[in-house]
Image (cartoon, rainbow, N blue to C red):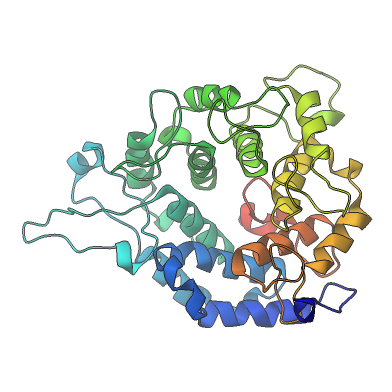
Length: 351
């Protein structure tokens, strides 16, 4: 596997741009099993190119037309309240036509796909006033459960912090919070904070880097915690910040990388998930940035992109979060990232 290691001692932006251009045009056969998540893969490629400062490689009109073609639309007002979710499909393979009577029997709209769709539209500068946001937000309330969590689809699935984050990000990007009960969502999030300060994906589960990001980013987007809370004079917070800070800082391992859980190997993506938590809290300055930079370079592929672990082939998911991590490390030439939304700052503010 040593032959797969990058010999580069620097962030090779040009190779990363070529890697994402290839992924944006034609995915390798290994991604066939991810066909249902094509919209998410497109988000990684397009947002990655934006962070790398190469958005001019993207045909913005073509992208926005394709993304909008994946939205499910209700026939009338009554359909908005029949329990279905009218968001975005993840791909054509989950987008079925209506039956002979015009009824949408198989509506595969998904919260994660809807988050990715809106993120892409933000990135390419699409005018959000042209989006049917009412159908998204009204029907999204059908997905929220009595405990405040969210199902990703109306036909039923697991409920955890990932989909609370997707709902919060959707409302934030649409600048309309009618799609969720924020108080119920807040209570669910608080019930997920563990004894050690981190957050599990569901109440009572082990603290996890991804779950902790979803919790903290959601609370920040909903306005329940301040950005850079560590610098504020007031010590009161709805979450246990000192324990959370301690847990997050302990996730940086001896090799400089971040692990998602205690006693796990360092993994490229947690440089964003856990690093993002520290950025939101105002504790990013406390990490060993030089060591993190060094670890990430061991995961940089000679072909462009990043792998999960050193010495492995790159993949789109870990590449995107590798680029995001380098953006947080203020790598020259990269666009600053809006950590709580997972897109470039310039896209988040809409300019």
